[in-house]
Image (tube, rainbow, N blue to C red; front, side, top):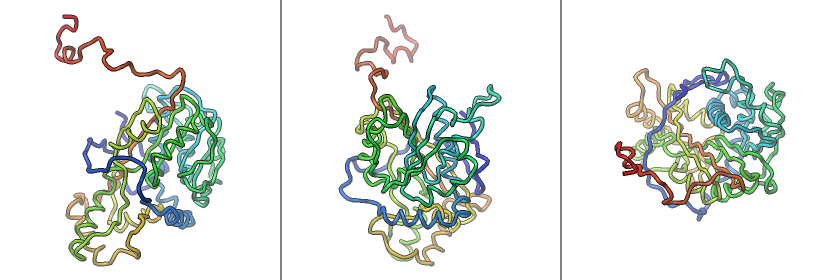
Length: 353
């Protein structure tokens, strides 16, 4: 397994990598949402305001940049070129930047490898926040890849015709989608036959340290709890959602990024600067009470604090790969067609006996 690689553009706070064990969660059966979970207009305003402070917005891009770099590494396993690729929910074109990085291949036997952008003829970066999408349009990486930027009305309605793209990538944006089953079906529709969809989204146990600390603090100070961390999809749901959308040859895995912060206030400041603040419909308006914040900081430090005094925050990334069905695509054998007895093979017995 390749050790974690912290890209040159990722500043402190320090990031650590942990391969997450499979965990179970109490979740509802996936299906079309009976109601809207997120206020998309509120999320649009949060991202627009955050991107207007260009210096701060770039400083807190360490999570998006790291997620994008890990996502594009999966293209190394696909031995083909891509004439037209869509980056869905592009944020500040973090995937485009990652594609232009030199030496993306982790194989130590290769002294150097060309940027993955050399395998992509054209990239369309699409996002609903025009300020964030065009934030880095003047940076040098734009000269290393053919890219256009499309401003979407929202990421839940894709304006592209069927069979348009040779691949669809998405990093660090799907966790704000209300109707994920519908979006995945749309992605399948705009892909060409036998083309991949590769995505990374926040899910599962992300920010569990902050979530539990604020819940306990509110129980202590107010006698009840409000929603301060948005609900996230569970890894167990993702495979089923991809399958329902018509994708084949599915791969789903989980990776944790652990970031150490000096205080919980620094964590929440960075989340706000990323445009990743809470946008749940029906959430309590106004800021969190000061006494709750102070109590939450103490609880966070007591329950989760590191020995050096820093506070870890876990961001769980769910990676998914699904392929649109194609006429020449490999298909699994029918059930019951196997000729070898797996139990006997594992036990060292003679499968022909």
